[in-house]
Length: 208
Length: 208
Length: 208
Image (cartoon, rainbow over all chains, first blue to last red; front, side, top):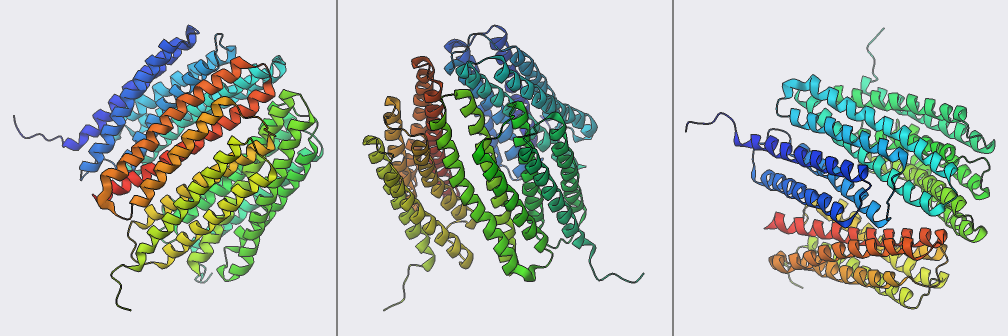
């Protein structure tokens, strides 16, 4: 075997790809739980399992960061990106957990739409993160980031309508309390995706 | 035209003055909405328009920061100050939005007092920020910052009383839920003003 | 009096010991209030008094930090540690305040268990912080930090069960609203202890 031109440090991109894969997985599992209105302990465990895998990958990134002298991106940026990207998955576990605790068995109509936005946002975000390996694709990566930002704004509108309707549609305070929490947490997921997209965007500016 | 003794970098202070102006504007508009118990789409749009202007100014500050080699204050501090100052305006949009979503048409009595505190706090905060241009005024600026801090503590007390009264004054859980959220968000506005005042205060210490 | 071998900078550890002492005090006072279901103004004032003392100690640490050239730990780390450690006490004041505002006179059963976890967590955290003076005790300190982390996970489970039971156990929306807030705030206390433990843990890695 000859001398590799690819520095070992580029393994960071492989690790981010793995994290992206888990992010896609968790979103698919969450969509499936919502579609089937299945918030059983078992379906929650599937989310938890993916979150554990993502945690290990993030931990590996931190470990490698501590041992690597020259990194393909700024050390701080790799740290933030891994940490914030992993948080997307944590928030999907959080909302899943919430739906189990609140004993949800029928999904609010608006929520189905919000979940679709989340899935789209995660998909675009993962495309952006995967693109980082080749920063010459700056324009393409930026498009993915803009899409994440667009979906976040769309989600804000949708959540506003959903919460307004919650308060006018029922006098059941407990129902309102539960769904208000769920909609607010779904907003946090879209915000978190946008935060990660902003980190990716700033990396492109830096390397330009 | 001769050589200007004023370095171009001092334009940062002009930009902060502009941001302060928008902060005053948004507070006046918010007070007027509350006084008239008018949380219509139209009155919300007036808040949104100001928030957009403030966003552009903040963006300009960041752009200028990226292009300027020597800055009149630490780069990091200019960034934090702009970011956190802009957040005050974002929070006023947030609470306005909340009052629209919650379909508020009559204002809780305690809230009128809280809004007065917010207006006073923003006024003192803007005086402090405008003072930064001339750090020799350290003592005067510090007085404005202390006032912001005093109003934040006063706001905490007022909110505690307001929320305690909410729970004893009615059995309408939905009413309580709405106003608890509104009072908690108004607390965040006063906290945010205090955070900005703390940044201003630390700048004075640094330059002393 | 001879020349002291102990550099003056080691006074930082004395200050952290003092902060730990107040943290233990506030936890004991809070436990006692909960045990006696006493959330009177007077019992709240006892918490407030301790919080004020802790604030002064934290302020002293910051003051000393500004005046000291060589510090026994990284400047940034001393700042974070003091700030976040002090936040534990702030949160205990916050939850105490909340219980007063919500006019709590009977304590939810699950809450008694949560409060025990908080007391244990604070006790382990203080052991960890006190250990910093002698970083050769790294392994012992790490054990205390792991214990704080274990209690945080345990607290998450307990809170999930408690909130799930809240929603199934009553139709009193106002009761649910109050205790959901209280349980969520108690979670923040355990999270905050874990954040401080993580800072302590990272100090040990750095000095290893």
